Length: 173
Picture 1 (cartoon, rainbow, N blue to C red):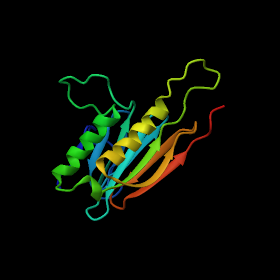
Picture 2: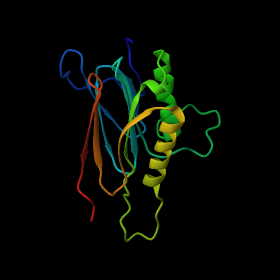
Picture 3: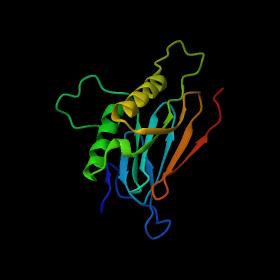
């Protein structure tokens, strides 16, 4: 595979070594390829990481909402969980691999609304439920999960090694 599939602009940061770039995913962004270090910061959003141990291909998506009510003829949009995973699945299929070949991790979905609020949208919980369903639907091999609670998370995926690191923030008061 010569080029990554992504909705990210080309990285602007210097290379860590001759072949690895740091790519910071913002909400609604996704990336699939080789050689990069992918990072993202999550609140109620969810990130799903995928990695193929034999080929060292992988990717990550960072979605804001589980799905949209009516897509119509619009293009797939990484802001929605079902569409973000579809974009990753399309990219991995272009490599000749299949979803069952990939190790998956599911992170995020924090409850970001303070307990004193009268309205709860449960976006984090709905995002988590969508993540579970999508991993199951596509047949990915689920390896690790860190979801819910009320803490932000920073997630990193090193594509050459497949190592995923999660750093949890401080609980909100």
